[in-house]
Length: 232
Image (tube, rainbow, N blue to C red):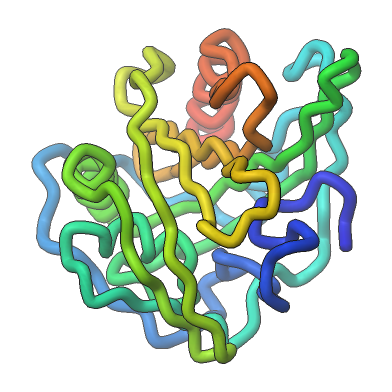
Protein backbone atom coordinates (compact mmCIF):
# COMPACT_ATOMS: atom_id res chain seq x y z
CA UNK A 1 0.00 0.00 0.00
CA UNK A 2 1.31 3.47 -0.89
CA UNK A 3 1.95 5.43 2.29
CA UNK A 4 -0.56 8.26 2.52
CA UNK A 5 -2.70 6.80 -0.26
CA UNK A 6 -6.41 7.60 -0.36
CA UNK A 7 -8.66 6.43 2.46
CA UNK A 8 -10.06 3.45 0.61
CA UNK A 9 -6.59 1.88 0.83
CA UNK A 10 -6.52 1.88 4.64
CA UNK A 11 -5.86 -1.53 6.24
CA UNK A 12 -9.49 -2.11 7.28
CA UNK A 13 -10.74 -1.44 3.75
CA UNK A 14 -11.64 -4.20 1.29
CA UNK A 15 -9.22 -4.79 -1.59
CA UNK A 16 -10.28 -1.59 -3.25
CA UNK A 17 -7.82 -0.06 -5.68
CA UNK A 18 -9.41 3.38 -6.00
CA UNK A 19 -12.34 5.63 -6.53
CA UNK A 20 -10.88 7.34 -9.53
CA UNK A 21 -10.17 6.69 -13.20
CA UNK A 22 -6.67 7.70 -14.19
CA UNK A 23 -7.46 9.11 -17.63
CA UNK A 24 -10.26 9.45 -20.11
CA UNK A 25 -9.32 5.99 -21.37
CA UNK A 26 -11.67 4.55 -18.74
CA UNK A 27 -15.10 3.73 -20.16
CA UNK A 28 -18.73 3.35 -19.15
CA UNK A 29 -19.17 6.83 -17.72
CA UNK A 30 -22.48 8.67 -17.60
CA UNK A 31 -23.58 12.15 -16.48
CA UNK A 32 -25.84 14.09 -14.13
CA UNK A 33 -28.18 16.78 -15.39
CA UNK A 34 -26.89 20.12 -16.61
CA UNK A 35 -25.38 22.40 -13.98
CA UNK A 36 -26.13 26.05 -13.36
CA UNK A 37 -22.77 27.62 -14.23
CA UNK A 38 -20.12 27.53 -16.92
CA UNK A 39 -17.07 25.51 -15.90
CA UNK A 40 -14.26 26.29 -18.35
CA UNK A 41 -12.09 23.97 -20.41
CA UNK A 42 -11.12 20.42 -19.51
CA UNK A 43 -7.44 20.07 -18.59
CA UNK A 44 -5.31 17.24 -19.93
CA UNK A 45 -3.51 14.66 -17.83
CA UNK A 46 -0.23 16.49 -18.49
CA UNK A 47 -1.70 19.80 -17.35
CA UNK A 48 -3.12 18.21 -14.21
CA UNK A 49 0.28 16.69 -13.43
CA UNK A 50 1.84 20.14 -13.79
CA UNK A 51 -0.82 21.53 -11.47
CA UNK A 52 -0.12 19.05 -8.67
CA UNK A 53 1.25 20.71 -5.55
CA UNK A 54 4.94 20.69 -4.76
CA UNK A 55 6.53 21.14 -1.36
CA UNK A 56 6.36 24.92 -1.38
CA UNK A 57 2.63 24.77 -2.22
CA UNK A 58 1.86 22.75 0.91
CA UNK A 59 3.86 24.14 3.83
CA UNK A 60 4.41 21.57 6.59
CA UNK A 61 3.43 18.71 4.24
CA UNK A 62 5.53 16.21 2.30
CA UNK A 63 4.14 15.70 -1.21
CA UNK A 64 4.80 12.60 -3.34
CA UNK A 65 3.30 12.53 -6.87
CA UNK A 66 2.06 9.06 -7.83
CA UNK A 67 2.06 7.25 -11.14
CA UNK A 68 0.39 4.00 -10.01
CA UNK A 69 -2.94 3.07 -11.56
CA UNK A 70 -5.67 3.92 -9.07
CA UNK A 71 -8.69 2.22 -10.55
CA UNK A 72 -9.68 -1.15 -11.93
CA UNK A 73 -12.63 -2.06 -14.14
CA UNK A 74 -14.47 -3.91 -11.36
CA UNK A 75 -14.52 -0.85 -9.10
CA UNK A 76 -18.05 0.04 -10.15
CA UNK A 77 -19.76 1.35 -7.02
CA UNK A 78 -23.50 1.92 -6.77
CA UNK A 79 -26.08 2.81 -4.16
CA UNK A 80 -29.86 2.58 -4.22
CA UNK A 81 -30.17 5.78 -2.18
CA UNK A 82 -30.47 8.49 -4.81
CA UNK A 83 -29.82 11.33 -2.37
CA UNK A 84 -26.40 9.82 -1.71
CA UNK A 85 -25.51 8.97 -5.30
CA UNK A 86 -23.24 12.01 -5.86
CA UNK A 87 -21.08 10.90 -2.92
CA UNK A 88 -21.07 7.24 -3.92
CA UNK A 89 -20.09 8.32 -7.43
CA UNK A 90 -16.86 9.67 -5.98
CA UNK A 91 -15.98 6.02 -5.29
CA UNK A 92 -16.84 4.62 -8.68
CA UNK A 93 -15.10 4.03 -12.00
CA UNK A 94 -18.44 4.83 -13.61
CA UNK A 95 -19.79 7.99 -12.01
CA UNK A 96 -22.74 9.61 -13.71
CA UNK A 97 -20.44 12.49 -14.65
CA UNK A 98 -17.26 11.50 -16.49
CA UNK A 99 -13.73 12.35 -15.46
CA UNK A 100 -11.59 13.20 -18.47
CA UNK A 101 -8.14 13.06 -16.88
CA UNK A 102 -6.53 12.64 -13.49
CA UNK A 103 -3.30 13.17 -11.53
CA UNK A 104 -2.71 12.56 -7.85
CA UNK A 105 -0.19 12.74 -5.03
CA UNK A 106 0.04 11.52 -1.46
CA UNK A 107 0.49 14.12 1.26
CA UNK A 108 1.76 13.74 4.80
CA UNK A 109 2.05 16.41 7.46
CA UNK A 110 5.49 16.98 8.94
CA UNK A 111 4.21 17.84 12.41
CA UNK A 112 3.44 15.56 15.33
CA UNK A 113 -0.07 14.76 14.06
CA UNK A 114 1.41 12.81 11.12
CA UNK A 115 -1.79 13.46 9.16
CA UNK A 116 -1.77 11.55 5.90
CA UNK A 117 -3.95 11.59 2.83
CA UNK A 118 -3.96 12.58 -0.81
CA UNK A 119 -4.81 15.29 -3.28
CA UNK A 120 -6.48 14.16 -6.51
CA UNK A 121 -6.97 16.44 -9.50
CA UNK A 122 -9.62 15.43 -12.03
CA UNK A 123 -10.86 17.27 -15.11
CA UNK A 124 -14.38 17.18 -16.48
CA UNK A 125 -16.17 18.07 -19.69
CA UNK A 126 -18.13 21.29 -20.16
CA UNK A 127 -20.42 22.09 -17.23
CA UNK A 128 -20.25 18.66 -15.64
CA UNK A 129 -17.94 19.78 -12.81
CA UNK A 130 -20.27 22.57 -11.69
CA UNK A 131 -23.29 20.28 -11.92
CA UNK A 132 -21.61 17.53 -9.87
CA UNK A 133 -20.51 20.10 -7.30
CA UNK A 134 -24.10 21.34 -6.98
CA UNK A 135 -25.28 17.77 -6.43
CA UNK A 136 -22.57 17.16 -3.81
CA UNK A 137 -23.62 20.23 -1.85
CA UNK A 138 -27.16 18.89 -1.66
CA UNK A 139 -25.97 15.36 -0.87
CA UNK A 140 -23.81 16.24 2.13
CA UNK A 141 -26.84 17.90 3.70
CA UNK A 142 -29.50 15.32 2.83
CA UNK A 143 -27.45 12.11 2.99
CA UNK A 144 -26.47 11.00 6.48
CA UNK A 145 -25.74 7.35 5.72
CA UNK A 146 -25.87 4.98 2.78
CA UNK A 147 -25.06 1.46 1.68
CA UNK A 148 -22.76 1.08 -1.33
CA UNK A 149 -21.98 -2.04 -3.33
CA UNK A 150 -19.00 -2.65 -5.57
CA UNK A 151 -18.65 -5.13 -8.40
CA UNK A 152 -15.38 -6.04 -6.70
CA UNK A 153 -17.57 -7.98 -4.30
CA UNK A 154 -18.10 -5.85 -1.22
CA UNK A 155 -21.08 -4.07 0.35
CA UNK A 156 -20.54 -1.51 3.12
CA UNK A 157 -22.45 1.13 5.03
CA UNK A 158 -21.07 4.63 5.35
CA UNK A 159 -22.04 7.58 7.49
CA UNK A 160 -21.74 11.14 6.17
CA UNK A 161 -21.44 14.35 8.16
CA UNK A 162 -21.24 17.77 6.56
CA UNK A 163 -18.34 20.02 7.54
CA UNK A 164 -18.53 23.82 7.17
CA UNK A 165 -17.55 24.73 3.59
CA UNK A 166 -14.28 26.37 2.68
CA UNK A 167 -13.81 29.67 0.91
CA UNK A 168 -11.20 28.51 -1.61
CA UNK A 169 -12.36 29.41 -5.08
CA UNK A 170 -15.85 30.12 -3.84
CA UNK A 171 -17.08 26.64 -4.81
CA UNK A 172 -16.19 23.90 -2.34
CA UNK A 173 -17.76 21.25 -0.16
CA UNK A 174 -16.44 19.19 2.77
CA UNK A 175 -17.72 16.15 4.63
CA UNK A 176 -16.61 13.40 6.96
CA UNK A 177 -17.27 9.97 5.47
CA UNK A 178 -16.84 6.89 7.67
CA UNK A 179 -17.08 3.19 6.96
CA UNK A 180 -19.04 1.72 9.88
CA UNK A 181 -16.49 -1.11 10.04
CA UNK A 182 -13.65 1.28 10.84
CA UNK A 183 -12.07 -0.29 13.96
CA UNK A 184 -11.36 3.04 15.67
CA UNK A 185 -14.59 4.67 14.52
CA UNK A 186 -12.70 7.33 12.59
CA UNK A 187 -13.37 8.34 9.02
CA UNK A 188 -11.82 10.53 6.39
CA UNK A 189 -12.33 14.16 5.62
CA UNK A 190 -13.13 14.72 1.96
CA UNK A 191 -12.90 18.27 0.65
CA UNK A 192 -13.64 19.04 -3.00
CA UNK A 193 -12.75 22.41 -4.51
CA UNK A 194 -13.91 23.23 -8.04
CA UNK A 195 -11.77 25.41 -10.29
CA UNK A 196 -13.57 25.74 -13.60
CA UNK A 197 -13.90 22.21 -14.98
CA UNK A 198 -11.38 20.75 -12.51
CA UNK A 199 -11.91 19.15 -9.11
CA UNK A 200 -9.19 19.17 -6.48
CA UNK A 201 -10.21 16.50 -3.98
CA UNK A 202 -8.41 16.35 -0.66
CA UNK A 203 -8.70 13.21 1.49
CA UNK A 204 -7.31 13.40 5.02
CA UNK A 205 -7.43 11.05 7.98
CA UNK A 206 -9.73 12.10 10.80
CA UNK A 207 -7.66 13.18 13.79
CA UNK A 208 -8.25 12.66 17.53
CA UNK A 209 -9.53 16.23 17.86
CA UNK A 210 -12.11 15.72 15.12
CA UNK A 211 -12.48 16.14 11.36
CA UNK A 212 -10.15 18.87 10.11
CA UNK A 213 -10.24 19.67 6.38
CA UNK A 214 -7.30 20.89 4.35
CA UNK A 215 -6.44 24.48 5.38
CA UNK A 216 -8.09 27.21 3.32
CA UNK A 217 -4.71 28.76 2.51
CA UNK A 218 -3.47 25.54 0.89
CA UNK A 219 -6.67 24.94 -1.05
CA UNK A 220 -6.65 28.54 -2.29
CA UNK A 221 -3.04 28.20 -3.44
CA UNK A 222 -3.94 25.03 -5.34
CA UNK A 223 -7.01 26.75 -6.84
CA UNK A 224 -4.81 29.53 -8.23
CA UNK A 225 -2.25 27.06 -9.55
CA UNK A 226 -4.94 25.19 -11.51
CA UNK A 227 -6.15 28.50 -12.92
CA UNK A 228 -2.61 29.38 -14.00
CA UNK A 229 -2.05 26.02 -15.70
CA UNK A 230 -5.35 26.37 -17.55
CA UNK A 231 -4.23 29.65 -19.14
CA UNK A 232 -0.97 28.29 -20.59
